[in-house]
Image 1 (cartoon, rainbow, N blue to C red):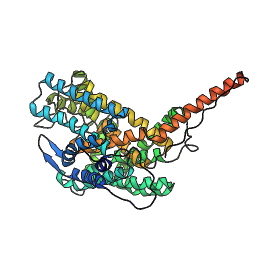
Image 2: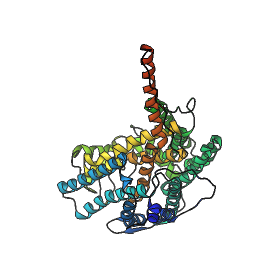
Image 3: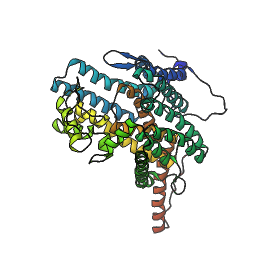
Image 4: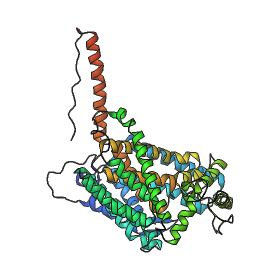
Length: 467
């Protein structure tokens, strides 16, 4: 049985109260959050590689649930858990239909279970507690930097792409959130310029685009401040300018790389890589991600049940090389000699569909929908952590579409998913929608009063705002 003091430490408050002093205090729950983030730097090899964070989370989850059983009653949280359960069931059925090896079955099932575990632990422990969100973000960024030697990476362009850039970006976007909250937008943009220059120097094209889009979404570029009570009516008209901003930022990042290629700025390896990716007939996106059409072919071959966990089929490696050669992305049609030729996907979305069938992909389709909603809300309301949220959500959307779902992403994306639901369920957003509904009722009553002046009209009384 848990005492009241234990519950107060473990439970994540639904809303962060205003601080009455500048003194920042920590309790045992905050230190546990730091320990969870830092332990992501260490992994243990069992069925596959498992971060120590997930072991600690598995031990803590029963206590967190006992401390606050209402944490999983939010509708969006229940939907995420339901879709994750659907992925698990679909994966089990796919492995049975395809007679996948037991080792592959265990790895495929563990991938989904531990991702669900990470999301559940962070939902219960962090909630909307701003202090714990910042602590976990900084701890995970530190773990990302210290984990680089375990990948065999030194301090070069590869390590920048697979660890340093994301860690530095998280810290910078948190600092940028402070600047934007104090409306020092020029200083915020000035602080991001060195980051984008380093990304350009290291040839990290996608990160340049992500940084630019995050900046464009969070800056107050729309005419006038966000109107309280506009609800969905206002937000739906923001989608078009947001899309224009996003496409413009992607075009700017690609143009910067093109100019670097034109003037021979990059080293020989990057020069050859970018020339090969942009020299084909279908554009640079397919050149950088040639796995996309091959994964779509694999989905078409088994759309319902998929091919099973970590499916191996050399046919798709031949299709990949043949596709690159046919459309001018490679000078040879001979595939590389791979001992374990898995089906190439290089995407969360296509991976789940290829390996688990169509039902397994529903979770990532739903998360993409939530990301679009959250970005629209961020641009409209600009919460205190707006730059950090925008960077995290845009990165998450990119990973779902164009990056593999490795063990090193589970902890991060469980955290990202909690932040996503936080933005979509902020009290300010809900009160704005409620205020908008009251305005509609008031307008109807005014119209009725004009039509029938003798009929008394009871005007709705505004509800007090919850601080």
